[in-house]
Length: 135
Ligand SMILES: [Ca+2]
Ligand SMILES: [Ca+2]
Image (cartoon, rainbow, N blue to C red; front, top):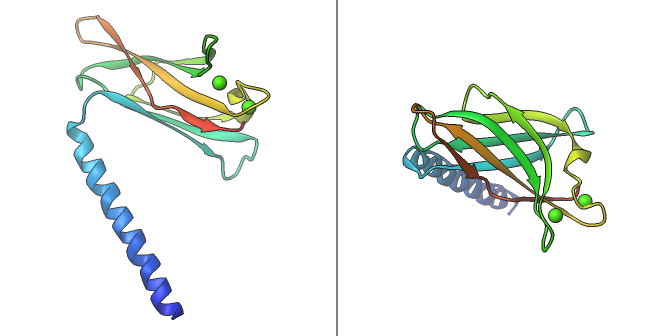
């Protein structure tokens, strides 16, 4: 029965991969927004890999600044740091994991605000999802 179990796992992985591909293909026409990922760094154990991937309102809009926050309630959210002038609507970097420890006695809730500049010079901000972790 081990073979069947392996086959079942392989099929499940294939179904998941197909679903992911379909979701990615569909996102080309998705509404404007940002998706934030914070993952463990595989080589440098004291760092995390951060990727904030945005779909601007228009392809000609440029990402000027991405600011990272720790969500708090009922007090105001913590401003952690900002990064500037990404050439793509994507902010991807490695960072010391403790900078995301915005709640020292409990879990941490990280999100980003990305400021875009349009071709005419106006600006708008896109908020990401919230990533929960224990940094
Ligand atoms: Ca918090
Ligand atoms: Ca914490």
